[in-house]
Amino acid sequence: MGFEDQRVAIVGGGLGGMSFLNAALYAGLKNVQLYEQAPQFGEVGAGVNITSNANRVLDAFGLQESMTRRSSRKLPCYMEYHSYKSGEYLGHIEEFSKPPARLLHRADLLDSLKERVPQSSLNLGKHLASIDRNSSGAPYTLHFQDGSTAEADIIIGCDGIKSNVRRDMGLGDTPNYSGQVVYRGFVDYKDLPEETAQLLRKTVNFRGPKRHVLILPIGNRETNSDRAAVIGFMSEPLEAWDSESWMSRSDIASLQEHVRDWCPQVQDIIEGLRKSSPDGKMLKQALYVRDPIDKWYEMGQKNSGIILLGDSAHSTLPHQGKFLATTSTDILLTIDTGQGTCMAIESGIALATILRHWKGDDLEGAFKFYQDLRKPRTDRVTQTSYDAGRLASADTPDQMTDNFNPGALGERMRWIMEYNVLEDLRAKGADVLDFHDSRL
Ligand SMILES: Cc1cc2nc3c(=O)[nH]c(=O)nc-3n(C[C@H](O)[C@H](O)[C@H](O)COP(=O)(O)OP(=O)(O)OC[C@H]3O[C@@H](n4cnc5c(N)ncnc54)[C@H](O)[C@@H]3O)c2cc1C
Image (tube, rainbow, N blue to C red; front, side):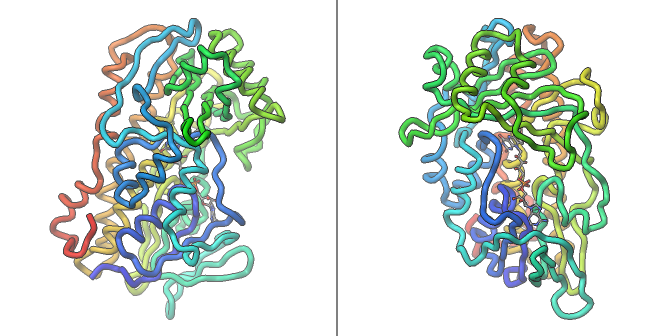
């Protein structure tokens, strides 16, 4: 049983879509095509932190060696906190469980996810414009901007927060500005004073007043790919922003303005950014989020359906509705606990396994089981990353409180990192999934 022979169309070849494609191959779905709008694969932004919960899945796909080759190695702890003002050490969170977090460039993660997938399943330059729901023949026809079409029985919308698939499903909500922008860039370690370079070989969070600067040490010395990824979360009004693009190249001076009176190490980072960036600019992105939705799928004729995965279903930026759509700078600034990609990786293996090993033949039952398995967890991640953000950028950043101390912060994240989606699938799927030829 299951839906292994159905024609599956993945819309979007970002980290979510490529994770699902890997999961589909791993689970044994036979007829899967991915459609990405860009003429070639690419990821903008800085580093990405892939934590143990997602690494378990990627290792099951056989990507451990590939990921390790591209990631930072032997980090002493999960995250270290420092005062924005003095640079003084405030505390740290231990690594949670194995496999440890892997920090790497986003494009490098995409390269790992590309390694095992056949070229014949990748379709580039395919911007989905609309979907026809047919009453006979193939249940769905996908129409692309270049005039071409494709047919499918199941469509997986992995097209991100601005998802066309989501809009096509009649979900006409618009994303909300979070009140936050994020500055992203890289610093070569050679462009930093030695002492600061040593410090930034760890994951470091300079915890400031309603803003913070996060450093991810990505890559490794062995492959000459080691750099400090700089992610500055700053509160800014939306005025003067082009809300269509949400992203621009900004003068480094703009970030510097926010951190002018911060500690010498942060000033070193600003100088390092200047030296490492030939045009004196860095990426600046306005962070948007959508309100959660109750249902991630719709059903079509003849056991067909459309379902959302990744940011199209649950953008995990660190905000909740009550703090949205403000242009005030006096808002609580939040931090992403970095789980959006990790959630998409977990969701990918869950959905692919369910589609492949579903005992019955009703697709709606399979979709519902998938959503019931995933939504409580992704909703909770969204909520707790908002809470964690309030602790990361505080009114009194140099003070430890009952909530802000390494032990308490670690405990807030433990349930995320220790979760094993493969075990959860085995346990909760025991009655509805047929595992006899499964690799789980
Ligand atoms: C500052 C910041 C830091 C973060 N750090 C982390 C981290 O450390 N760890 C972590 O796990 N997560 C992190 N995240 C979250 C993570 O980046 C996202 O959750 C993740 O990238 C979502 O992947 P996605 O594939 O669902 O969407 P996207 O990455 O948006 O990909 C969507 C893809 O669909 C394509 N597409 C869009 N429309 C169409 C169309 N009409 N037709 C065809 N293709 C289309 C796009 O070109 C794109 O390739 C971070 C996010 C931010 C903003």
